[in-house]
Length: 77
Image 1 (tube, one colour):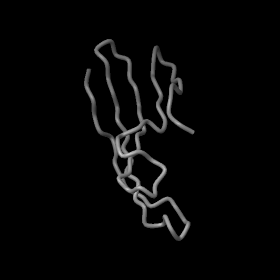
Image 2 (image 1 turned 90 degrees about the vertical axis):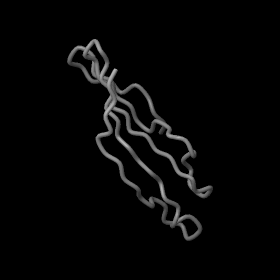
Image 3 (image 1 turned 30 degrees about the vertical axis):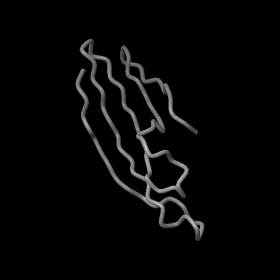
Image 4 (image 1 turned 180 degrees about the vertical axis):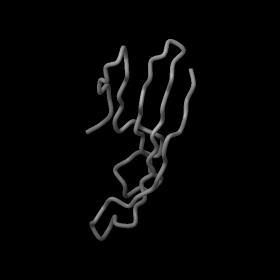
């Protein structure tokens, strides 16, 4: 299995006065398995207590590529 970090960024997605400075980290990981299958995972985290995201990396959206087909497999709404 091989993992690659494709992208990472930070944003402040909240507009309310109390939470507008809360920063959320994002990353997109590509996971390639020995059999040629691939997973693409968008993960988020935030150390800020005002953010809805947890402190550890958590999948927000995940897709797997199997046999030429892409299927959404997980994440949170």
